[in-house]
Length: 480
Image 1 (cartoon, one colour):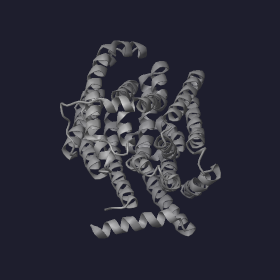
Image 2 (cartoon, one colour):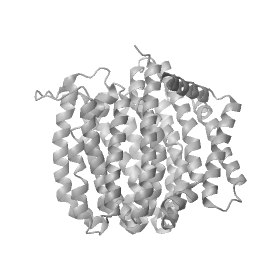
Image 3 (spheres, one colour):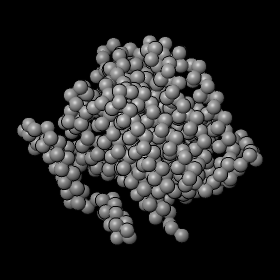
């Protein structure tokens, strides 16, 4: 039998493989679609994204998280969640179908009526795959989840690229999402050993409701928090402006998803499995925090360093304003995986109510701030968004760890060496390469120099996480 450490390492590896390949594919197809489409195309999709994300959260209703948080879920528990999701998916799609004119009126954009009704079809595909995904996730079947996601990304993105080339504009982006959901759902069924039955017992739904309803509210609030800028930009500015911001947000999200997806592949399951041993659970959390910081700070701060060169070379000067937004967003993106770990630690300890309260407070603060500041322009809104999300890392830490031995000093000790090293490396790299005029040479030079310098700093500092990561990768290669 594999030890918990071995299962966690394997889950992190496949989570990293999954997200690494997906982000590479996202990079390739993002460049293709960014060149073929206009900011307004992305803006229209960004306006309605919040509704599909909230609908997905309502459809799941927190029960997939409840399954993962259950020590040993039974087949009947998965079956109850499956049929509940089927019912919710149908009801929510019909509600959104008839609400499409209201959404279009909010943004004063008639094209959204037909787009909403088509783009939300993905809800009907996803509702049948939630229980299968939870089963694979709970059993640390990260390899199968990775294969499903990678295959779905390749096929859906290829179709979207062809459609964009043929002039289908924003319809290609909506099709990409729908196809991804459909293909990944079918493959989760293929890889999962569990199958639903017609013998339905909703005992688990009733038992888990007090916990799951808080997760549901928190999920809805999280989606609002993540998309508050798109909602307000779509309302008070143009589709073109919304598309420019959304392009920056999506590129930042590709980087943060690389680390978050890797960690979230295992963190909830592992933290729940050791929650009866609080000291061991805290040791697991700290190791995950160090790993996330080790990867996140150089990746996001480095991406911010090369944002202008990357955007101009990859998708053209028409997106130049997005590069400026991207530089700012990458700063708070660097701490997002750590904030997510703190939030998941809070959930693993059964504090779904506190998780909900923290998420609600952040959402309200962001909405009030953005509504107050939108007359001062998008740049002011983006900078404020960054500051609030940086500050909220400490709020998550306070509530997640206030009755543990994990002090603020220890958390800073776990993350600051990586943050300072990455910031110093990016500053030095920017200074050394500042006189290079050719954008291609500048991009390549900065990427190579920053990577070499960060690795050298970690080696000289004797970073244990670097040694453990290197040893695991070498062992994996030898086994292959």
